[in-house]
Length: 505
Image (cartoon, rainbow, N blue to C red; front, side, top):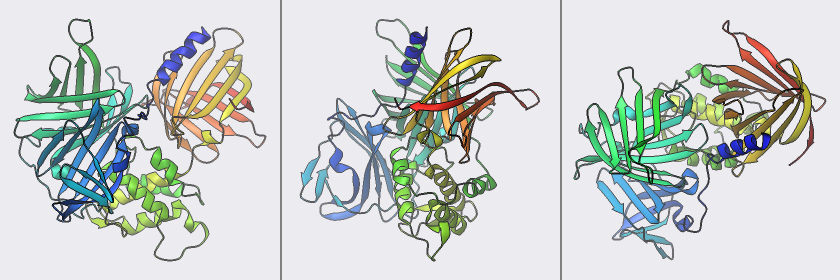
């Protein structure tokens, strides 16, 4: 039974993100970075190429000094393909051909040489027709739920390319990522979507019909997006299966708008961040997953370069004490730029154009994320004893970083004096603020956690069904208390353990 359950948990782990690291996926390494773009010897703007979806795609950003913006996606489907959308039109290539030069490369009759990417201070808006705006109902930050009410992931959809495209950044509760670019193709008179995830590429097209936007790959895949009267959106995805007749449901999700924290919540997130935090942002940048938990209203592609600048940014006035910490820098940035929503100001280094709320949200989120979660310090194997549902029980906990250190896996085995063992698995983000739980009692739910430097309090599900509190005592022993929520909003304890570290595995 234990082996079978462990196999089940291992199978669940397979849904975690798998990076694309084959030689074919790395064939375009040479274009990654920031470039000046020239056509016929004349500078036309700047471009940036960056890996996304764990190396399975490359995002192409383009900007001109006059405010025109473009967005593209390069993806491997047998050969490297590309799609690029801008107010000037749509460019597609079924085979990306790059020619190296002494100072860069050429592609599609354009030359690229190293130069700093400069996003426009103000983006010129285009593509304002009714057809271009037909998918506006999908834009925003969403929590996504199954028909049974279980949260299956988060999705951030934002408008890019001067309003000519929507980019989707999906993160499932099982930590799989996906990304799509969506746009109205005027010549074809249809909406199109290119979706990329590890092991999956979809090219879909369709139109508005019967109160929903329908996209399909005829005979293989069909999706519908339906805006509901209560403000939610339903996404219904069907696929054909080899050797089977008819269609099978691949995904059925209801989108609910994510709650936006107030200014006070964001300020509190800053002030509660431990003083003297090291600006260890490089690790965070590389651990980014599509769809940030912060409520920023701009292209997440701007965040990673911004983080690098924030890590090295020097306050305009000398500071003392913990002023060199990321926390102090973030607070100073927030205070100096936190004007009214809609009142924009530019980062002093490169003109990244954010409104005051975005500055505050960005500073708060990254200040909190700069501190590593406790599981890195607690990694290894812990064993101990306690009580589980009133019975004596033995417990083993194993904590280890996974996926190149981007997440932390926590495996728990509880063996009561009588009855079957209980097995559980949680996969935490590196900062331990969010996780997803699966166990041998068929529970599966998201976790939101709070780490204050001493204790980690993990709240199960939404609405909250219970909580686990982990804390390390002065004696070096790990304490775990599990409680279930009551109707009166109180918590009732049902398990508690004391564990000692027994080694690394």
